[in-house]
Amino acid sequence: MPTLHPARILTGNWPTTSADLRAVTERLTDFLERLHARRRAPEPDPAIGAWFEPADRPAPLSVTETRRIQARARRFVERRDARLEGLPSKKGLGQQLTALARGGRAAFVAAHEADEIVAALHDRAPWMAAASCRVMKELRCRTAQGPGLAGAPPMILSGPPGIGKSAWARHLAELLGVPVIQIDLGATQSGAFSLVGVERGWGSAGMGMLTQTILTDRIANPVVIIDEIGLARETITTTGGTMAGLIPALMSLIEPVTARNWTDLYLRVDFDMSRVTWIMTTNAHGHLPQPLLDRCQVLDCRTPTPAEYAGTLQRMGDGRLWAEGDAGNPVFRALSDHLRQHPPRSLRALGRLLDRAEEITARAKVN
Image 1: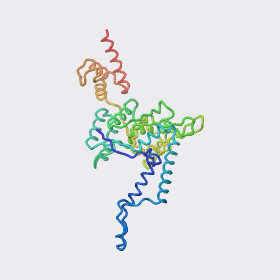
Image 2 (image 1 turned 90 degrees about the vertical axis):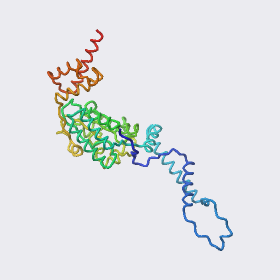
Image 3 (image 1 turned 90 degrees about the horizontal axis):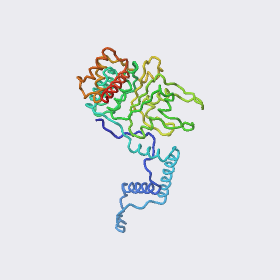
Image 4 (image 1 turned 60 degrees about the vertical axis):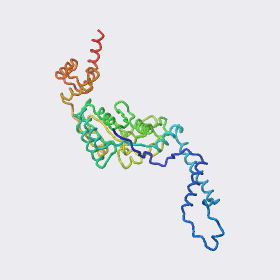
């Protein structure tokens, strides 16, 4: 089972304390007094040393030092309050950001766990072998010297529709033990807004799903799935003007150098997004922008074979239409015969077949 390790997600100097002015002043005073105590005292003059008793505690701070401490504490509290005031809905977001600064985490896997993850991926979808092998190589590299970060480099899964590319990516996130974010560009034209949000100043300003998920779960390496990446655009035209589309936002997030210090335009806070796993799906990749192809590995996925469809049928029906692993069940045999005569065109067709079989079975029990 993947384990969580401390990880710094906020790259800016976000204040991690809610202390008031008096508490900050006391901490700074205590620090300076301890600093004075560690300094080596000058050798006493033997001629006059007998006239004085040794000091039991360090000398009090001077008036100048006290004034400097008070001024520094006041500046710290003012800067902290200014940052909180600049946040929309400051009470909730300020608490979430403070919690993230204190306790960011990242999921790690050991070498044997990496092998188990890849085996589970391949067992469930052997036709996605190209993607599973890419994950295997990456995890083995990361875990060569001990537990490694759970995730994979940016990849584009290219293959026929309905073969389970998104389902494979969701299964990967489940095995890695990290949150999953899924954006279907075929269902929304505002992919950039959904992912990274909208900058303050626009009427539709708000956080994107990526920042929301990280603030809520405090996990540095979620899996982001973008379906139908071929529909992504460079720019989006709205009633208020032209805004950057999903492609420019992706460029800054999947490039390791810029992702390490990525600024959320709504919060205006810097995050380290370099540990996020990006998985994009498409039916064909020839028309995708070259800058995107240069930053991702394209993995071609094939259509399942009849035997693989039969294995998926049994897995999807286990515990639903028959006991787990019951290959002799009459319903399973009837559906297997149907598949041999009428091969499905996709996993979606297989799901509809199971739904129809469940409906007929339930109707027969009632009658």
